[in-house]
Length: 312
Ligand code: FES
Image 1 (cartoon, helix red, strand yellow):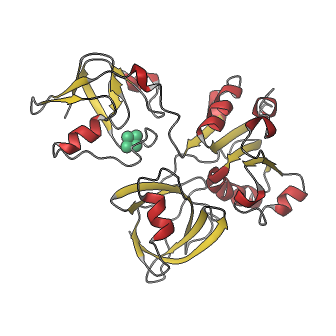
Image 2 (cartoon, rainbow, N blue to C red):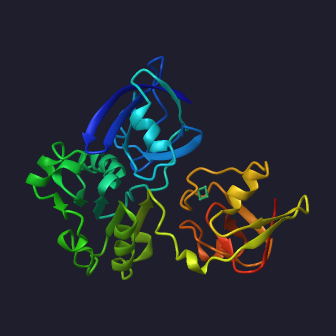
Image 3 (cartoon, rainbow, N blue to C red):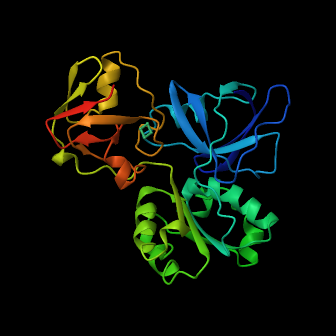
């Protein structure tokens, strides 16, 4: 779809909100709480969670953090995109939905991870569901929706944590997730260290009650261990060297081979590729153990064997 940027709003330090509408004012496809859009920006596809109420049909709202090491996506949105511009957008996709059978919901948001949680909160309030939100940021100035969430904080359904950059001063995730109650579902979205701490603390939870969404890649594994390897493309028989510091996708692209990607960080699944021979060194956050027996995400994974043969 091509949508028009109706407004750009300052939400917090380095975080803007973008309101996207149909240029002719028509209703947009429905979305579920926790859904995201792919935006085509500066030659990349970028994923952003919707933060507005899923009951709204006339707009999609996304929050964008200006990333320090932006490859162009967030920088472009912050510096170049203007109200009135048009932008290419995919229909909403939902891979972080609320579980409607839950007795209660426990939600943890870190930084810009509040975006999908905001749309969930809209649904949960409408359903009069029992829920509690833990919202962690560095400071009030870096807290998007600080004012909008005051009423939830006042009635005890939301707690703010400002750690000033020191996680030890923020939410004690292990304590918050200790002793899961029967029927409680957990949702978390935030930066890598928060995701890791939540995953660790939720080990005792029933896996079907735990839902999460990465918006950045988990910290990359130690690069010292990386070794060069070769990929062989089964259909053409061609082989390419993958040096340390370059991904399979980057090398193939450099040789003019088109590969479908989106996040290029190992969390969206767009670059899923079947492998025929060799043993991948999986680095994604998408594939389950059985998927890893046949598939590899080539934007981030490497190879444990000298040659990895792909079904390409
Ligand atoms: S492009 Fe997103 S997982 Fe590879």
